[in-house]
Image: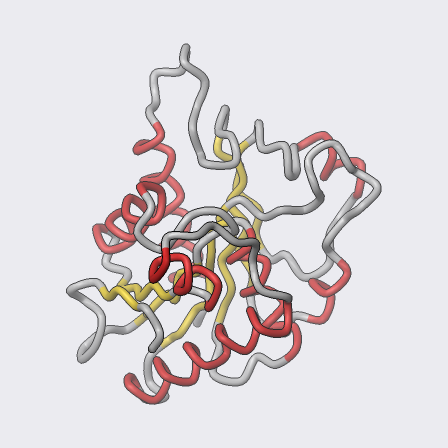
Length: 216
C-alpha cells in the first residue's frame, strides 16, 4: 500500500496540486518535507506526498537501504500521478515535484511522458554528484514538453551558480531561482538574517509565481 500524506486543500475545489517526492535519504515526513508542504499550502497550493517502495520498506522494518533502481522509482511515481489524476479529474493543474532525487525523478518522468502532468518543480536539483562536475544529469531535460522550475541554493554542492554558468543555457529549464546562501536543504549561512524556514517560504512563493505565470 502506497504511503501518502495530503494537505487540507487537496481534493475538491483545488485549482493546482503538487505531488511532492522525497529525497534519497529522508522520508516524506522529514522536517524539510513537512516545512515545504506547509509553506506551499500557505501559498494556496494543495499538495500530496508519497513514498517510494524502498522508503516504505524502511518505515516497516526500520532498516536503512539505498533507493530503488530508476525504473522502479519512475513506476511508483507514475502510479501516484495516475492515482491523483483519477481523483481530481482533468480540470486541475497537476505538477510533479520533489526534493533532490525526488525532483530528478519528477523531471525524468515528465521527459518520458507528460501525460497528466502540467509542470515540474525541482527543489535542490542534483545536477551532478558533489565534487564531480564531469557527471552532469541534465540530458533528459531537453526532452521536457512542460514548464520546469528549479529552485536551488547558491551553496548547493550538487550545482552552484558558477558551475551552471559554465554549462551555459540548459535546455528544458523554464525558470531557475536561486536562494542566496542556501545549501542542498536550503539551510542558509549562520551569519545570514534568514532562517531555513525563510528560504523554504521563498521557495514556495517562487512556486506559486511559477504556477500563475508559466502554467496558463
